[in-house]
Image 1 (cartoon, one colour):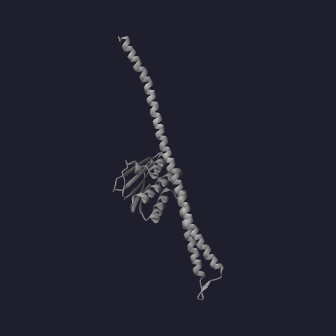
Image 2: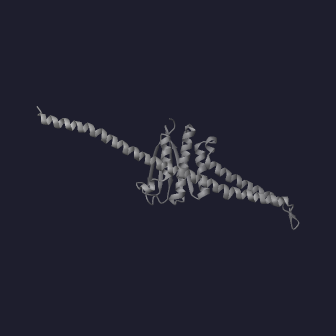
Image 3: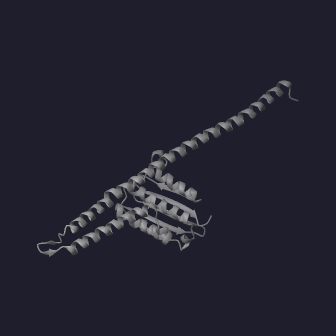
Length: 257
């Protein structure tokens, strides 16, 4: 039989355990919530910065390209109105018509590029795979990076909901943007393959790579955005990189869910 003194110490230990365990759990919960709040604040800040960067890009495109072309068209039309249609007796009307037509075509290409970046309508019109092919071509045209494509989805990509197809497109878009911005690579690759239940997307570059365990390298908004989009699509996000050996991002998204 325990003595009264032993019973006292057992009782005291039980009381302390009952008090300490909830206190420790509460402290752990507070620490987790604070950490989670810091993560969300950091993500929100970077997201706002990305929105501002996107708005700045649109503003630059409109100001430096579209408005300049409009000014050229206005100048050509003003000269047309002046009645000066001949130089050294030769009629310049066909030349000016061709110049106006060329400027209008270039303006149309520029405006389509801006509209496509803001909302890729090709996903609604043709589906994910043609949209990825177009993205590869656009990346090559804008950055000079040669983007190889390999798609073997057996038509299963058409089973994706529009939301998930758009998320995969945005992940590929962000991945190629990171390649152009950070990797220093001249060549990249996009692959999309299907299984019975999922679409797997991979974005690979052959650039400088980085250490994935380095917080400074892996905390960029591009990687955070891709991981968050994958999570929202109930998918799996993986990244592999090594200095001097490039980077590979793999995403797997369920066909249905």
